[in-house]
Image (cartoon, rainbow, N blue to C red; front, side, top):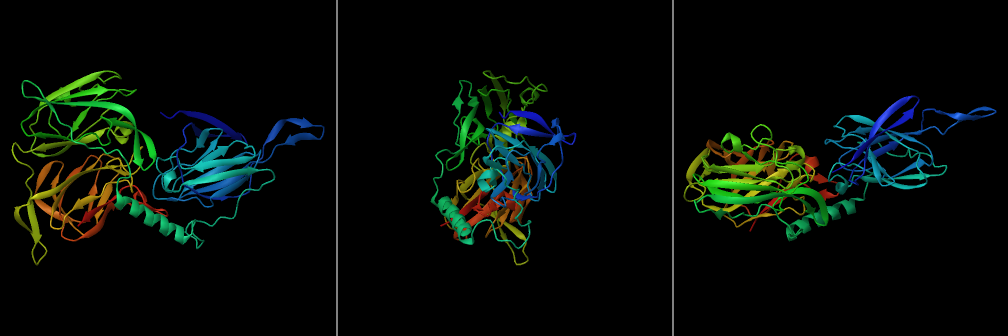
Amino acid sequence: MDTYGITPFICEGRSTMHRIRTAFTGGAIALTLIAAGCSATSTEGTAAGPQAQAAPAAVEVTLSDFAIEPASIAVPADTPVTMTVMNHGEAPHTFGVVVDGSTIETAVIDPAGQATLDLPALSEGTYEALCTVPGHSDLGMVATVTAGADTPATTDMAAPGSDAAPTMPAEQMASMHEQGVKDFLAGGQTDSQGGQLLKPTILPNGTKQFELWATPVQWEVSKGKFVDAMSYNEQVPGPEIRVRQGDRVQFVLQNQLDEPTTLHFHGVTVPNEFDGVPFVTQDAIMPGRSWTYTFTIVDPPGFYVYHSHFNSTAQVGSGLFGALMVLPKTGSWSYPSYTTDRAGYLQAGAPAKIDQEYTVFLGDGPLGYTLNGKSFPATTPLTADRGDWVLLHLANDGAMLHPMHLHGYHFEVVAQDGFPLDQPYLADTLVIAPGQRFDVLVHAEHPGAWAFHCHILPHVEGPQGMFGMVTALVVS
């Protein structure tokens, strides 16, 4: 876990508080440094009077999605630096500078907000500057601060939105974007994949028992990039669990974390004692302990979720979630296929024969912007043959709204939160709120690779190409 200290720096009697973060994470900023200062005097003096200390350099920092302009920032050595940090991006950002192994950083700054960061006098050398929001450094939000003797603060930066040249050559931007797409289509970016099917143990009384263990793991979000995560059975998302309406089920959760946890069955009707809310329906499951949840599946067939309900911002955001699929007592999903008449109205046909089925979890927490715990180009393509009916189970276990958009097709939205819709509808952009689930059908009639992504653009694309919440429906 990150450790923060609070250190005041004084300028004309004013104390500016900031955090010191001991872990190195990433950030992107556009920086304008303005030589200015506030005066301070020492308590020591000479015969000629008090000896003046060096006036702090005043620096204006502008955060954007996702770049640092300029990439190298010069400041005078042995002189305090006061930074006014403004966020002109569309996503929350921070700004920090790594000094002697610790990161001095601002709090999270919302879009259009600002904060002040005071740096101590820096010895000659080069220091890393970054946004510490997970994943943002990988998108180019990094810079260097160089402290030199008799070096004035950098002032030759163009303001955001000006006609200044981009921060990297056009050829480099195009090449990086192209390489990302090639890597994605080649597949196999990471060895680990979440959401693997978990088979039950059948107890003598017929109860289906599923064993889960919550454990910390180093999760490979993209090729070669490992982050601290929390997992069920060393997977993000946790293993997919499939049961049938009427089944008697038992979930045994073993806590191998260094903090308490619980297990909640989101959208599932359970006895109150098994609802998984700490100190409301049960005690917290302490490290090294286990808890057993036993109930009968009474809900209609549909897509449900299980996840942690303790310190859930961190635990769910770090990977403690998974799919719980309730199938009919016999057979599988049954959703009608739809066509449109000349007036554009949906006309129900025979039940669609599901040829391909995918579960996709949307994430935006400590792992960054992810689909099934992976960031593009390490996300998995959704493949189908021409003419296939594809069933997508979409769930948002993040903290933000995500409008998911599929190129070249319309979704047939057939179920919400596990319940079939009496009146399905067409959409090419479907807004999924935290905690919501949707089932959508796609009739794969058009060959090619069709992008499927969140349409909040800072979640998917930057000057280095696509990242984050992007995959594609590839129809052969």
